[in-house]
Length: 112
Image (cartoon, rainbow, N blue to C red; front, top):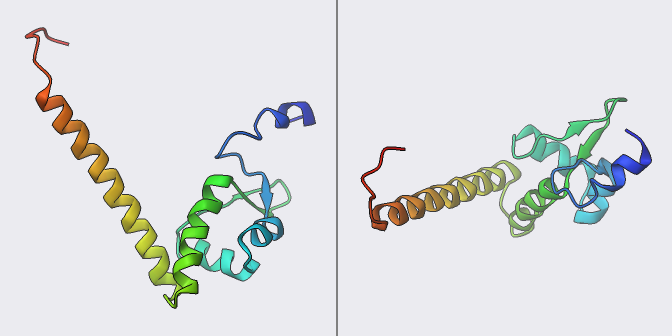
């Protein structure tokens, strides 16, 4: 990928643009915290060709949620589990709302 190609990806929330050190700086935490939430399987950073961890903006938002819980005294593994469960609950609510909308829509009687 050339530099010109990567500029177009800067707005991509899933593009692994941040090194571990930069990610830790942005979050105001340590690389050890990022390793810990990776070990707890909250996020899985991508690896550069040299094997270095790279984080996306989406992953940093998730890490920030866990960090907030840890700052409030929650153990890292518990914080990660809470964030995962919150995301699962939000997804279940979204699916449930879609089913409710679909049930309210009139049926045309046509096969799809």
